[in-house]
Image 1 (cartoon, rainbow, N blue to C red):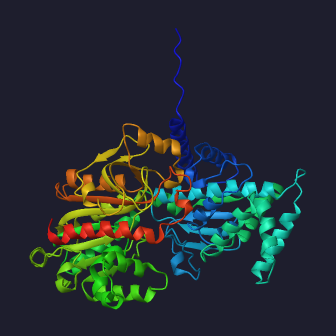
Image 2 (spheres, helix red, strand yellow):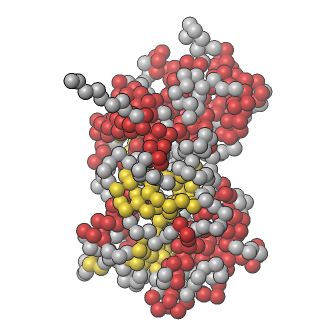
Image 3 (spheres, rainbow, N blue to C red):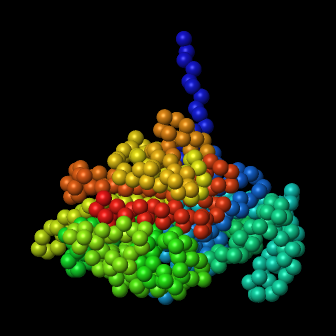
Length: 565
């Protein structure tokens, strides 16, 4: 009797699409180059379309250009990349020492260099996750470019009048000449396959960000290069430098980053002091410890959160500088990154902070501080697999010519942004384990933070396993619902947790360079809920609403560190 195979679920189909996409990326990276609309590029496009990630919205609509997705992507790619036929991904290869002006995307810390009119070089120093991230974004761009090209042609494949008028508008815009904006919106709406209102909204969103070109400019150049490839065989191409292919996976940047930090600790007699590592943004710890004393009297605040809201305003750069200046005079040292990791570091000697200057919200135990002399080490967010590289190198003993000194690490805390699966933006997740998507790896751990630590503060708080995903831009609802509703009972998704745990468990349980009972503290605040329509990262940033959960978590972490609890 023949057996019938069970039909695959939508989640299984989506997970297979992710795996195929990553296999294609790894193959093309090893090969060294590919054409986005060649056979290999089309295979990636087909996998991305099948996956249909939430962040790329209407990618599968044959006419409607995905506007929120475009804005999200262009905030993470170098300005002007839409004009470039050739994109080359490189390691750090000396361009920082040339006269090329680096282009740094607003939402991704990458150094990029416009070599000429047609070519953009992009430094990849943050590991494979960074490479996969940018290749996914570029693949999405080529899909949308093809839509624009097709929308610009009539049934005989001749250019529509709207396309010719867009070219004139872009020329006028470039030369600073005036044009009828409402007429321009009308032409553009046809080429984007969107309504007039949708087009106006997108135009305003793009024009309000100085780090991206106008949607008129982007639409024209995406369509132009797509047309030239189809009509004139002027192929677009993505290449990977031999240096990048050689260095990837060898911790070249993480090792240099960690050595710079340990040398500072050694030279300043901090290497054997109790060390508390915090992976977080570079401002919340500093503001919580120093802002009340630096500017609190001037602003008259009632809580650290209220003070942080004022500091987050765009027109308060002078106040932020005052806080940092005061912090540097009061025990904080900033180690700017020169290694290429793009992860800045703050080292805080707590014995140099005056107890009388600390906010009452911080449970400062000065007797404990003066006796134990803890040092707080704050590292900016890592990106995906880079978390393993940096943490793995950081936890190794310091070695100089004379001896080997293990770091006296007391606690490791991670505060990050993550997608939540039940709740909404700004809510809080407390993980009990990290499950690595697409592998059999899972990392349960004893989290010193509990759900009860954050309740009764006006935010929804959930506790449970979290999924460490290969890339947030590849998630779709089918996969996320599977993780939420199956026996995994996942509460959210992020990109670094399993990588951090892999490094920590190797250092504590195998290498024995870190004590096995090192205290672990993880908490995340929700940047988006990809299961809610309009709730993805592409819909916009948290803004001021992110201040409350950020400082709620930060203050809880600091209270535990500075009180010895």
